[in-house]
Image (tube, rainbow, N blue to C red; front, side, top):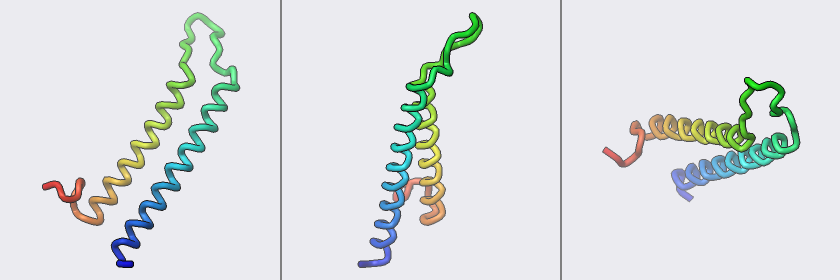
Length: 86
């Protein structure tokens, strides 16, 4: 096995474990929001935020951070944001 192939396999394993961890966290948060009644309408001026939107925005932010880390990693290893694209 070449060193490059070993490095790519290592990166793929880290990515797969991170996605599995985030998916598990997403499922736990979804259960927390569905079982709690913290978002009740106690006054007329209080806005109700749907639980799906809160969980979706949290997941969106986490995947955005993964993309940012991937861009920084690509820049550090190749000197380009998108390797192979001039």
